Image 1: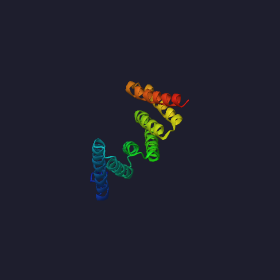
Image 2 (image 1 turned 180 degrees about the vertical axis):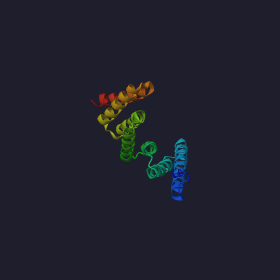
Image 3 (image 1 turned 90 degrees about the vertical axis):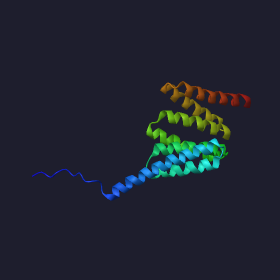
Image 4 (image 1 turned 135 degrees about the vertical axis):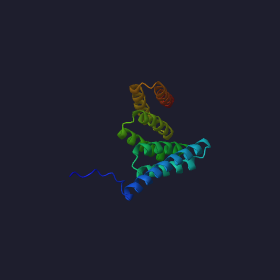
Length: 165
């Protein structure tokens, strides 16, 4: 006689783990929303705190793409706070996570942010590389608005380098 299929619910431990992951994911969304509200009010430190907390939760629930999004927003906050070394490091980590996930548009968008950070740090040649790569990715994807943004970054670099000569 054949055994009937096991149709029991997952054990309590598995159910609880799934429930806790869902709670953390909802908390990430709430933190991201609160952080965005703080940005709208120019409250950059509060926004940074929210995005950093959300990034930690994303790591706990093993969601690298959402973590990369939180890092991108944290980098924006760091830029606004003139914490440029941290902004650079944070956006580079976001770019790396998005590259691994294969999210080309996200990589290109974050490269625009990296370019702006690098310009503000005075690393104009590195900024040009970031804007150029961003332009190429947007071009490959056929995203004209992104190409325009990258071109504006390249124009800014050109203006800075020509005025330095």
